[in-house]
Structure formats: structure tokens, C-alpha cells
Amino acid sequence: MSLTCGIVGLPNVGKSSLFNALSNAGAEAANFPFCTIDPNVGVVPVPDPRLDKLAELVKPQRVIPTSIEFVDIAGLVKGASEGKGKGNAFLSHIRETDIIVHVVRCFENDDIIHVEGSVNPKRDIAIIDSELLIKDLESIEKRVDKLRKQAKTNDRLAKLQLEAIERLADHVQNGNPVRTFTASEEEREGYADLFLLTEKPVLFACNVSEADLPTGAGNAYVEAVRAIALERGSEVVVLSAAIEAEIAELEPAEKAEFLKDLGIESAGLDQLIRAAYRELGLITYFTAGEKEVRAWTIHAGFKAPQAAGVIHSDFERGFIRAETIAFADYVKYGTEQACKDNGKLRAEGKEYVVQDGDVLHFRFNV
Image 1 (cartoon, helix red, strand yellow):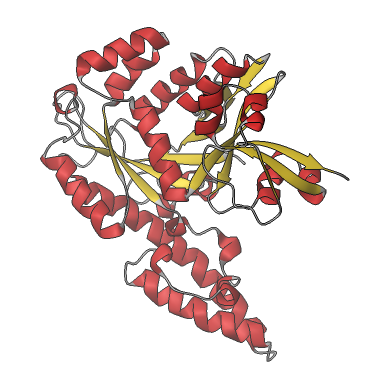
Image 2 (cartoon, rainbow, N blue to C red; image 1 turned 180 degrees about the vertical axis):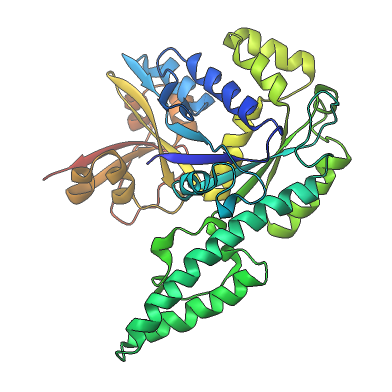
């Protein structure tokens, strides 16, 4: 399964600089190069030390990380929901993403003009929230009209969904995002296909100056964002788009030394990906053999057949069992055979819930 993050923010907050840095980061991985799908979409490998360790042990012909797609969504200004800037194009791109990465300017620089005249994270976040809510309300009201016509025919489901979506309209009208609205699965079917913008989880990326980066504490602007994120149950990543651009140009060994000199444990890209995985409830499992060692992304809670289906639908349809080794056991014993000899290779059935880091080999018959 692929993961898509939409990078949003007001002009001059560092959004495009961050995207360009992420793009370069993808280019440094020779076995999984950055791929430009169109001018504002990039795919980068997900860094995972466990994959590197498995490759070191197995020595396969190729190593394939799982990937993450970043979409640099341009054109958001006040009035985007009414078509200003690139308005509708911007909003349609967000509909296709799994999570929104909201880049917030948390630095002062007289040479970079703020579109609103000053640095104010709370106001900036409110502007984007407002644009998304307005666009969602427009979509919801169109659906209300459609369901009202259907409800006149005494369609029970239409009546149920109409009542729910009218409540949803009031909810959004009062400034509340769709993700905080409570509805049953049956009720939600009335608007699920609208892919409403404020239903998506949001991850805040605070773009700070280099001086505010080392401790990760940021500054007063970052604290303002953290307060908002705390209320919403969202995560905050503190990074510097300028520093990320420098990191992206370095070789892996140089990168580690550079981060150490700055007093930073990990690059912003790594932090963003880990936070996105947590927000979406995603985990990684691995397949390992002579031909390839590969990472796969799934939702936490997936049972073995569902995890197999991520590789190919036939694997799920004809699932027999999953030969499973915990990552820690694989590292301890060094080979699949050694794990088997020490009783660490398990045969798991259809009800097995895959764990983060599992090394799996699926048996199936179609």
C-alpha cells in the first residue's frame, strides 16, 4: 500500500523548500531513486535501519524499501475555497492524500515577506482551517440536496443518511472539522465518497531557523503550534527546511556527521515519516530472500491474509499460512535456517495479527 502526504501551507512558509529537500533526499538512494510523477509530486524511500540490517544478513540481489509520496500542494491563499490562487486545483489534490502535513512558519526573516505581513502561527493555521472547512461545507450542502430528493421516495437509508449529513453540515458550519464528527458506518456511507478535507489527519511541521533547531524545543512560535496540536491530538515535528536542503545533498556517512555536529538525532524527513506512520496507524513488515529483501507498509491490526494481499491479491485469496520470524530473532540468529533450528520460525494461520518488524514468508495456493 502506498502512503501519500499532502504538504500544505501559506506562501513563504518554507513548504516548497521542504518539498525540494525531500525530493533530493529521494535521489540519494541509488536503488530507489526519486521519481517525479509530475512537477509537484515526489516519491521517496522510507528510511528503516531494520531493512538495512536484514540486507546485511541476507545479502540479497536487491533491497527495496517501502515508499512514501509527497505532494507539494501549491496555490493556497486566503480565498482558495472560492477559487483564488490555484483554489480548486489545490483542494482537489488534497482529496487524494492520506494525511495533511501543514507547514507553519516559525521563524523571523525580514528578507522573506510573510503574505499576511507578520509571523503568527495561530492565525496562519486558522486561515488554512477556514479554507478547508468552507470547501467541505460546499460539498456537504450539495450532498444534502441530493439526499433530500431521495428521502422523498421514502428511502429508509436516504432518510437516515440525510439526518446524519444535516447534523454534519451544522457541525462544520460551527467551525468543527469532519474528523471530530460522530456517525455510524451506515450514516457515514452518505458522505464517505466525498473524501472531505477536514476528515484527514493533520501533522504540523514547524519550520524554524537553524538557531532554534538543535534542541528540538523550537521557540515561542513552535509552542503556539504545539498548544493547538495538543487540543487536536495531532503531532508536531520541528525542522528547518534550509537545513533539510543541506542534508539532502550529503552522502549517508556525511549526513550522520552533519546531524551530530548540529546536535540533531535525525533528519526532518525521518521525523515526518515516523510521525505520519503513527498518525495513520501504520507498521512495516519484511520479506527476505536471496533475490530481494523488501519492506511492506500495512495498517496495524492487519491479519496475515490481509498483509499477504498487499503483495498480491492471489496471496490473500489462496492464503495457507505465514511462516513468521520476529525481527529481533532474525538478527540474533542471523539466518532463516538458524531461526528454524532454534524454534523461532512459527507457522501462523489466518487469524494471526502481523506485528511491526515481522519477517514473513507466505504460503498460498490458487
